[in-house]
View 1 (cartoon, helix red, strand yellow):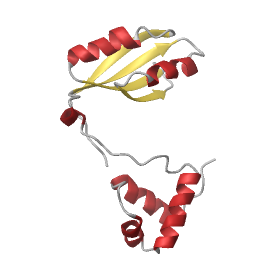
View 2: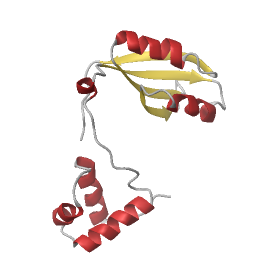
View 3: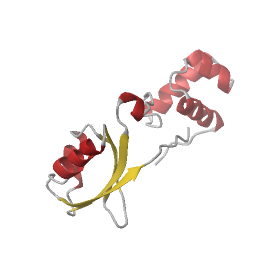
Length: 146
């Protein structure tokens, strides 16, 4: 069950989603609470799993990953746990999700170029035990919502 978030908690989450590097002092100023209150709220949001980590967003193309694709997988039933172990070891897989519908798993894959992407899909993903088939959709442009 998700913890109840009041308006201040929601504002803290929005501010940190926009800039995860905010100091507690600046965060407290932006949401109009004391620093002590901001520290205790942040600790509670982390403790309850609302905030799971603080990360940097990177422009994939600027770090040499100019080819991106969504790769969907059809897999053998009951292979999800085993499959995730394999997928976590593939650095090009940026995100994975178990989904319902036509496919079983959806991946966001980042590669240096089409040849690299081809290697990831045909040699790495399709070789995982339990993967029955893949479908690759190239991303022409990433649009960041935040």
